[in-house]
Length: 105
Image (cartoon, rainbow, N blue to C red):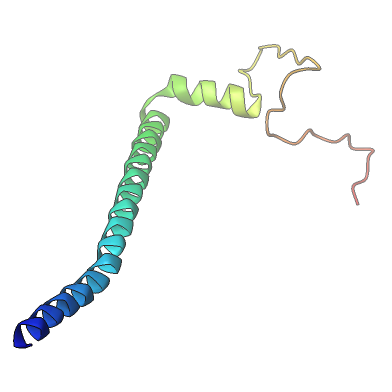
């Protein structure tokens, strides 16, 4: 009889251990997946930061970049240049000037 109780107690302890450890193992796997996703996000954010820093450096130190940006984004031109705009051209991002006889609400 004492041998049977020892075996029963051992099985009970083992069962409690398994029931306790299974959720912990699952939580560890979920946390590991979360860490990997966050590391991927960090990698992406660092790449974005490098790109932005590169553009900042270009704006500060590269006049050709600034000129290209002004032409592409704002439709600007040097004095004496003629700018041709076509119907299918994308907008430049600058609102069109209104004529002086038009009133705006």
